[in-house]
Image (cartoon, helix red, strand yellow):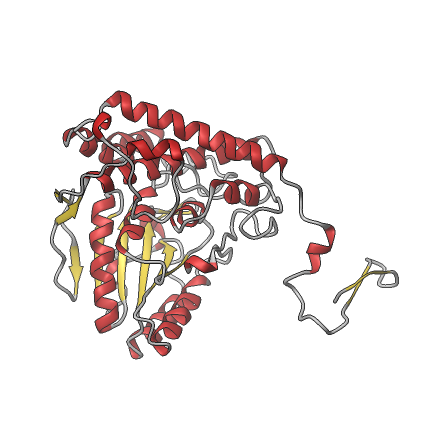
Length: 389
């Protein structure tokens, strides 16, 4: 079934699409069964089935959203090099299957909290490109009003709680959100995400202990891209089987480059967490960029390693092959879609560049409790610079 026979339909993924993309969406919701690339490896639980139910609509939406995420991150790379983005900037290209697969398995009542590699998770939760680029460039229309930057994206109305710059500190916060969900009887779960670099932190195990004691609906997701900054996992962890690290908490190892494996694992984990309490998911994934924009990413790994992953495991190419093999679209139609994505990203960047910077008074908002009459002084501690409301 080629795209010439496809028509408009709303999608189950969490963000609105352009009118131009609507012609690419299928009305055909006939189930398609897809086998995950690799079997799941389980700890203290029975693994889910490798057969995942999907549809033409979902396959196209996966492809389009992941391609948009990839293009967005590549554009952020260029903006950083042009000094339009300042400070820290951590890119997600290569790991898109984790964001898209997780989103397909949950609802907006379910919460997500992560570290500083957060742009694509924000987009998956329903954020707009304009909010992304405005925040990256420190503009008023950014998701954090231009004051958070790359590491501090938030979308509270979609239960996305950041965006945190302190390594591992989001894990106890995520368990706290799960406690609130259980206390309020929300019938929702929290996906608390961290990397292999944070997996050895004591606060993670303290939080996991509380989650297990109280049977909290907490799902700890280790995005194992195999390098904590520039340190390979085998140099930092005596036991790099992170899905087993919970000991008394069940775990599942997942091919994090396969969006459908992630979808199946997250659905399984949500059901488990609501009924039995916490579970750990280890997503075996890979980042193409360095740890951050200050890291070339090629001093502690070879270029052959990076290109080998691109050729053999790239998450977008995997979805593309499924789209083509099920005759959902042709190569030309997918290229047309990619051109639209480029234009959409370029338009969002241009709009964000025209957006004003925050007012200087914004420096003092969201910092102090209102009504205390706090005063801000200059460096000599004599001249009053501002009186805060």
